[in-house]
Amino acid sequence: MIQDKTAPLYTMTIGEFIELTRQTVQTVLLEHATVSTESSEDEHFSIAECARFLKCSLVSIHNYKKKGLPYYKMGRKILFKKNEVLAFMKNATKRLCNLAKKNAQ
Image (tube, rainbow, N blue to C red; front, side, top):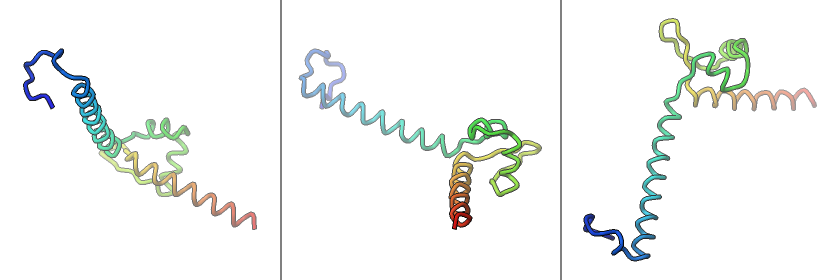
């Protein structure tokens, strides 16, 4: 690895360039993976944003709240955590599939 950062670039061998490029790409990918994981866990939706995310109406969101969709109130504002919305919808889909199987029998 190159220790002297003031050396001209043209003194770098092809092997050194390949190794430097590999390390740079790995570093950027690792940083991106860390940032995207943190931001998606902390993402919050308002009712309108949640409806857009799920591609449904505002009335459907209120119905999901009545059925147990977790939400948080901050004053008059209602917020939903993205990971909790996804978990609720996954469980709701499983429940509907199980119910349909029971009704079919």
